Length: 293
View 1 (cartoon, rainbow, N blue to C red):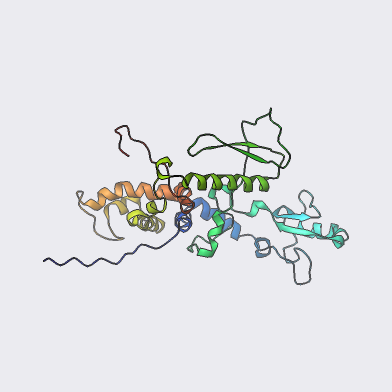
View 2 (view 1 turned 90 degrees about the vertical axis):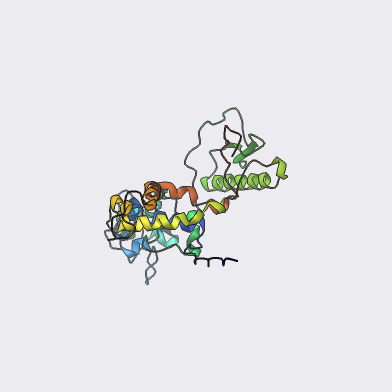
């Protein structure tokens, strides 16, 4: 009887969907530029704190714009730290508050809530950077319904499958709307997935498609090579950096034809699709006109 071939050790990293999303975002050129600009700010601005003498913003350069901070007493337009400290000296004796302005946070397009060095992997304890999302606007307002002031989000089931309709009281605080919106979606998702097998929509396990076959590892190799200055043509025809050019029939070249653009797409925004994959049981399968899925 023929002996089985020994299994090759896996090189796949056991990363969560949020960690994989970060692995692609950290190669994003726009994020790197934004992070570099943030790092150019004084440390006392990036890490807001009270000075050793107990003075708020006392460690910041005097010319620092107060627009970097949300403070009480409120700052005036174009006011500097030195000007604010001088003007509010008496007023601050009855109390003051200070926090970093939202303008210092990563731009919303990246979907993360705090800055992470793109040269570093994402530690497990930092996965929460993906957990914050905001409500930007509400369209299609229902004007003929009057909700109680505290009934910020009224939820109605749109279909018996996987959709919800929302009526939103825009007078409510955004933080309150965010929480109710998220709670409503999670609650309905649990109800949907708890149904009997015959009543469930056609879904498949979301985690199973994360890094399927180690494909993300291959994408990261491609992005690393691009980051080191190699061209797409170099990567397409040379399996290793500085290696020989492969013949046109080599299977590696055929694989690179799809893997290179896929890797770049993940870097430029595809990471958004996988950042929350661990929170889902699955996506709806596309139905085929042939009756197969």
